[in-house]
Length: 78
Image (cartoon, rainbow, N blue to C red; front, side, top):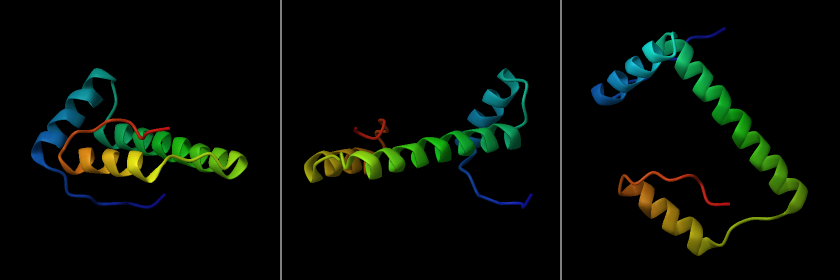
């Protein structure tokens, strides 16, 4: 296993600490689990796209990215 160091804003680290405590976990364990879930989901989404060829329009993608840039998170459109 390798080590990855990242810098996080204090607010995010506080939120991660709170979630880790609520889940009887460590921040490291929580982040590892979150990254694994994200990776699995993203790989599945790519595999589905490669299988079906289904995608989203440029307009929908740009609206989603603009929301992200403004700090408004919402799940990736399907």
